[in-house]
Amino acid sequence: MDVLHRFSFIDLPIRGQWVRLEKSLANATAFRVYPKPIHEMLGQMLAAVAMVADNIKFSGAVTLQSRGDGDLLRSLAECQSQSFLRGIMHLQDPDNEAIDEQPLAQWLGNGQLALSLIPDKASGMQPYQGFVSLEYDTLAQCLEHYFVTSEQLETCLHFASSASTSSPSVTGLLLQRLPNSPQATEIEIDAATQAWHTLTTLAATATDEELSLLDPQTLLYRLFNEHPCRLHEPRDLSYRCSCSREKTDTTLMMLGGDDLAALIAEQSEITVDCEFCGNRYSYDKTGVSKVLADLAEQTAAAASEATDTPDQPKTLH
Ligand SMILES: [Zn+2]
Image (tube, rainbow, N blue to C red; front, side):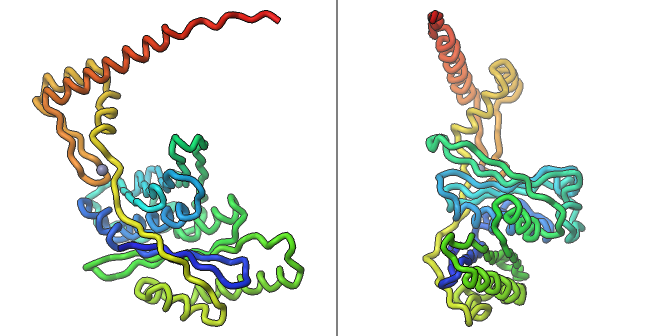
């Protein structure tokens, strides 16, 4: 099971998160083979959305997505309900095995990377989107900069991918300095600043091997044994795609009744494949007739709603 642990340093306004994904990453790449650096980037993006989602106070989704004109055309990593991950990378040339490790901005070309918080409709909250500056080489550095500039939280983030070919995994380690308490004395603030410097310096000494192989207790002890910290209960993470027959019906409806009718007249079957999980939704003539009937019903309902609304009487004051 993939898990995320929070941890906090005793008597210091510094907290952290540790996450390791193995099974979710295997599931996310089960039916698409990516070049190694792209596979690792997807792992880091999934680990990042899991960490951001762990901190949000609403039910919904957190996504990290890019769009550009470089080798990496589009990418998306999503964490739904703080627990369910899915993700995909679209390459300019999926057969190009020779994609090398390179700065994020170079992969994206003329592109953008955005972090979005999408609350469930029922919450009544507005979605939020922030753009992550691509002026640093790695995703970890770009996100550190994002947290400092958009959330005013000093952040230290490390990712490591295991080299194991049988079960590749990604591990993320994050430290974040929280605002000082309003009652904090100058001495306490100085101590927190000093501790932040020490802890981030120690975190940077962790090798990729230590990060990707050690369990969180051992890693935290090895790095920070002079600074007592408490490891919180784990949160389980797993891969789950949110596609469904109903959502696919809606996608087909967007083609419009005429085009859909023409399409099924031409082919005896329409298939829609989910690009995330490979799930195939097939529609024969009967299936399409049902979608067309639902579409006609919705259109009629929308039309009658529009005509049913009485004109508001004009009120004179
Ligand atoms: Zn799916």
